Length: 190
Image (cartoon, rainbow, N blue to C red):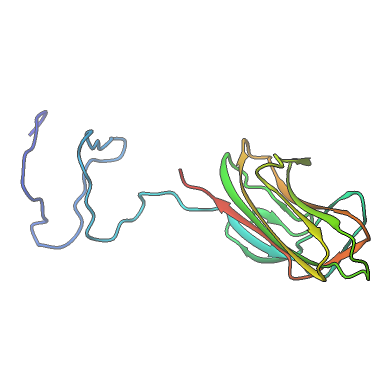
């Protein structure tokens, strides 16, 4: 049939198994508005992968000086799907535009023999600048002996050179951030 409409109830291969191909290279197969695709088998190739994805952790304790934002280091790679995390700079450079979910967990010892409160913040930086503190800023006033801080947020990479890092700020006595800190993330499929 040259240019027309094929109307059928079921399409199967002549042998009852194998591959059925709709269209050929360079063509577009269109599902009209209002139609539903129902899958009872295995679907492959329909959604994008949630990559690049990575997770890194600290390779030793790191001392934070008081009163200044200090970059946290995560020099041990746990997972890196596309080699987009650099352990030497503790930077995630996705290499593409899109939205990414980033997360952090850090712990430090707050016991200095004092019961006065101190401020401890962790921040996501993009291209060397702090991101919106209302969305991606974790703040704690600490009087406990050990403080755990979790942080997550959705960030946008606009081009292939955008990069993300984690900084911490401490207002009080210098503190050591434990080795068990982690930094990770993955692409969001929209």
